[in-house]
Length: 454
Image (cartoon, rainbow, N blue to C red; front, top):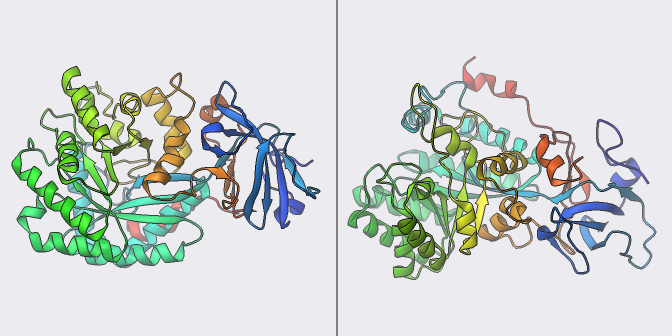
């Protein structure tokens, strides 16, 4: 049987790539992402499976060597124990900001520097054409790395609301059937009080484009009644429009960054019916044990999910000139998960003033999260954090997992174990969409040179 990784350039053989039905044998897949009976996990939490593909969908999944379908005389490919993943889910990104670093770098690496630089670039250059070019570039990066669904935040204040949302809507239609896209509005919650008309326009725009209502809750001052009232107004408006919430929360190590508990209280007080995703939550790591436990218990009670953005937060948090950072600046995912809170990790920003690096690669995010957050030696289901869990938060019940009847969307990697998966970038991975291999590589940065004024 052919081995797609027999050479340095992995590929499905022609008889597989062109077949209406074919079979994958001897794959290792995370047990936590496989919906099938009769399979068991190993010490890494992986299961040996066979998968039958027919007409672009998964016709069946079963234990390797012990799974048969009637008339199962199909061309087959042997993965020889290599890892087979579903296409992955990146639940927190900013593709409207992506790839502006060459023309607008962060002057000092700080959060304040990022805000200033991104704001200047937005005001000067974020036309519909500029956004479309950079968004498309970002999505081609994500596709090549094996992403199947992605949520982006869109700066939604001033004139940008009317520019960015139509561009995103066009992008979503262009990529439909290839990448599932969602968008969340992003604005400072003070705007709810300072400009109610602008807030209502954001709500109506988000609803019109079937988005998610989002905003920044910590703006440098300790929260009080003003934030509580803004959250009440926001949740009532979201509930009236049937919108979920996706908030930027306490992206700071400052002792004043204490809005997460206020969000949980508001969700409970308003009996908010939708999903709530809280991003960042860095300040949780600075609390004493009593406050820490109280806040996490409330987050669980309010059914709030949390996404950590470890690469971006490590870049920005606790940065000071001439001093080594002393705090990691990431949310305490172990404790949140133990309390029953759904937890995820995601890319966040990509080559912009908030994070100078990244390529919208969920496997890179998971690899770095494992090292930063010590996800190793702590259970066997952490891969859910870039697959099934964010898919659930996005309302995509057929994404981020492997199950009969789903689209035959896979990421095949050369690695055979968790250690091998995390030791290398897996840059020679093979992405399969609807049973067909993608001839996709990350685009060349030179494509954007004219936008960078080089």
